[in-house]
Image (cartoon, rainbow, N blue to C red; front, side, top):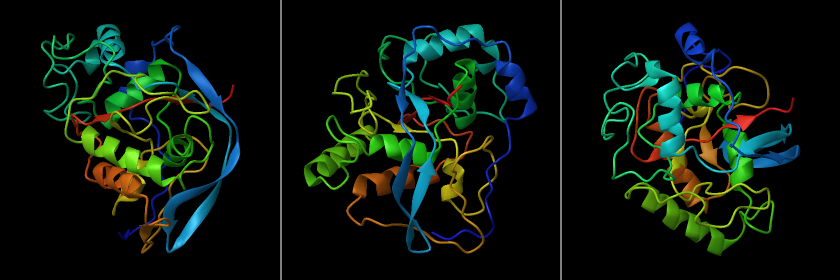
Length: 265
């Protein structure tokens, strides 16, 4: 995959999105777990070289955002209900299978990860928790761990299980959260239930628009850079990247959910 221009990914939310979340407050019952700062080697290779990223410490939501949590957000922020959201921020697939603009309906479990949510809506939800979407390297770093190891990516059994999980995530409704053990950081369901939005996902495809605010390591592919994979056995990761690069930020896929992260105070 080759890019045709530099992607800096450092612009903030559009003004209307900021207005949508300005009055939001954090959810007291949501748990975030800290992840330590690390020198992390990404499986993504730019121009044939796998980058070693200096990641600052951050905290990640222990589980994906659920149907019940997103329904509560919609009740508090009606501008994100499907009959009110601006077409600029979500397409016609946004929450299209919900029974009403605020009620998911009996086919959705309350503790099921919410899907059919655009990148813009996911970002607004995270802002309501005084958080943000994870950047790709943060998500990849957290997802590299299993229940006993901070980096389990060399384990073929683990990789086969992840591949089976991601294939299922692309073809079946998601199972409820927390059905599998959390990893060593206390983070559950990374890659096992749904594909997940990341803040800088747009950097992974050509002619990407710039959308990410704040500091910290982000994907930055500049004119003619080639995105590949340093580890050829990372099939689950390849599928995840392929799924994300097929999406526009207004898209709302039945297979894509999200979780949030917070920077240290």
